[in-house]
Length: 161
Length: 161
DNA sequence: ATGATAATGATAATAAAAATCACTTTATAA
DNA sequence: TTATAAAGTGATTTTTATTATCATTATCAT
Ligand SMILES: [Mn+2]
Ligand SMILES: [Mn+2]
Ligand SMILES: [Zn+2]
Ligand SMILES: [Zn+2]
Image (cartoon, rainbow over all chains, first blue to last red):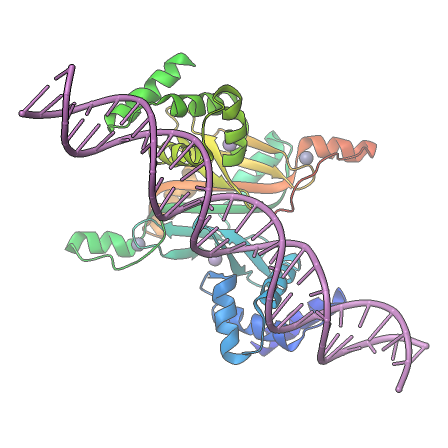
């Protein structure tokens, strides 16, 4: 955790940005919620708990900055807000997502899986890939099991797409 | 074209929706711009040319309806607006996209390419895939060539992500 | 210290999408 | 047909995520 923050600090410095208290608080929230997919508003509310003086604009600016530095990836699941996803350190590809249309859960796939596909795209379409977004929509394993037992779904998720 | 509209008409009727003149005009615009990725506003402006009395709200409602019927797919390239993409008839998967970070062009890949990947996801994550979104960000072949000759990019595209 | 620059927070502005509502068109049934 | 309900429309307002503005504060280099 501390080491991770230190490396982000260095990364900021290398582009002559500073790790201000507000930025650090924001980064900490992201690290502490690594598995989640927080919106700017989500981040704002969480940061406020430890740094109540922070402004929403600063959170937006920080997230934008972290996105430029490729510390976070900005992603849109089609529910009307951008979400910010901490990029795994050293990962050379953005991980993939499984969005459950039943319960709204978002699971992650860290495995690349696209190696062959990307080769084909680069060769056949002469397209130099810099990044990708891959999201599957479907039914997660939890909802499969629930359906078997006829249990309730218990979620309040905005309709996707 | 006419046959396609007829099939969409039947599809609407099968769910007891009507193909009103406004809906037909909207569908025609989508068909005539099949290769583009129009926003609701884009569609509105184009429909107005042939049906000037149409309202923006109706266009939004029609696009939402066509999305439910899986006639169009709603997609977000990270530039702040939803775009509507006519689904190829009989296609059982949503096609993929190549977004050029240099010139903003969006090219399409109709080939599936994900067969093996989806098998792995369904087996290893026990996730029943219903749909997917795959977008590559990078440099298109046109911009590659331009870079060789040092030519100008000539685009005014909102920053992606 | 001093002046320059970067960063912040409050607030206003922007704009895409959704909601509202009066009105019109279409379907249904007496 | 007539009337009654339902579906659809267009103008408009409302919502809300994000961006822009701007005065103030913190940081850095001389
Ligand atoms: Mn993720
Ligand atoms: Mn497309
Ligand atoms: Zn689920
Ligand atoms: Zn290009």
